[in-house]
Amino acid sequence: MAESIYGDNLPQMQDVMKRLEDRISEIREELKKKYGSDPVEHCLSRIKSEESMREKCRRKGLPETEESALGVLTDAIGLRIVCAFVEDVYTIRDYLAAMPDCTVVQEKDYIRHAKPNGYRSYHMILRVDDAYFAEIQLRTISMDTWAALEHHLKYKKNPAANTDLLVRELKRCADELAATDMSMQTLRNMIYRDELPE
Amino acid sequence: MKILLAEDTRDLNRAETAVLTMQGYAVDSAYDGEEALDLIEKNGYDAIILDIMMPKMDGMTVLKELRSRNIVTPVLMLTAKSEIDDRVEGLDSGADDYLTKPFAMKELIARVKAMTRRRTAYSTTELKCGDIVLNAESQELTSENTVRLSVRELELMQTLILNRDKELSTEYLIEHVWADEKDLPEDAESQKDIVWLYINYLKSKLAYINSRVDIMGERGGAFQIYLRAESS
Image 1 (cartoon, rainbow over the protein chains, first blue to last red):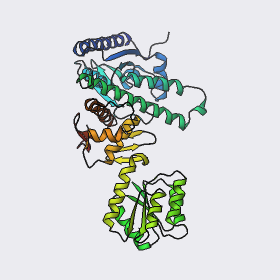
Image 2: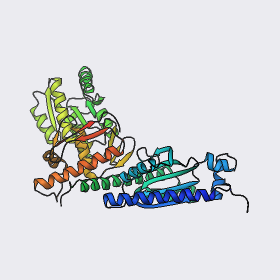
Image 3: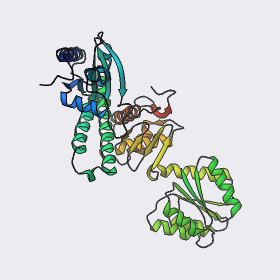
Image 4: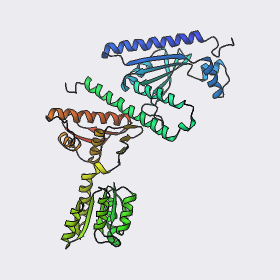
């Protein structure tokens, strides 16, 4: 087998990923104790496959080297944390940003500043132990639903289907889901403040 | 807010246009009845001011014509003092109000305001306020991002925007926004809960689209929109 684009870093990368997963489990436990419910619906993690990492290097015009994969590109290690409510996203974000062995390299709030196509998520790039980058995507169940379904539609073969109408309708769906997210958030807050009638 | 002014006397047309524009209305001028009807068909207006005596097609005919086409835009008729029959016929034909010439500009503005206040909630498709745009047709509230509103949220938001200069009591909102709600509970406490919930929905959604517009007020009290100093 040819040499990995990650060189001999894979075990350390696995370790970093595992530590991040464990940390998220701890945060969930803590918040469950504090608020009585788990703010995270589920959490996925992956190390970008050899093949897609090489493909990405080529697409970005980078040499297919360890330096490109680990020093230039930042998504070799990726985690997606799917939360129940919008505010949970920001709560988890604060916990992650406060981790002592991680520095936040970059943050993009596509929830507050939704992408023109309607995409919403909170993106963070962390640097762990001053060595490895990890990309974290935080979103709600609704945002995750939209992203998953949009992905299904985008990769249909028929190019005629990719019309302005489809783009517009997908954005409308995203905005509707965003409205529902906010209605549910409001209900939760009002229940929490005991402002809803019995 | 967009107004069509149909008045054939050029000087008067110009003066009325200037006064209404100063009040923040966007005014289209027509100088005869046919032109007025053309414009009404082409553009949506929030109010129409029709002089009765006009060349080509008189105001009464324009009024009857547009009502027959189910255009429900409020209409203010301008009539001469002696023409009582005109006023009666105008109101009977679907005019919302009339003003007899000569009139004071102050009164014209007051009547236009009163008339648009009555109708705007239903006839305006797009309302702007601060950094938000509320589109009634698509039920979308947009600032930096967009969210869709439910029908009730939309009506509440419209009412708040159209009355941005005053506080609206919970009772007022129940009467105006929940007027057609059949299952509305009758006790005041339940009504306060409903209004408060919908105010909260809107507040969250305004924050969610990154708008500086917010709503002040407490459960059971009066509400008014305002512009926050800085976006958080």
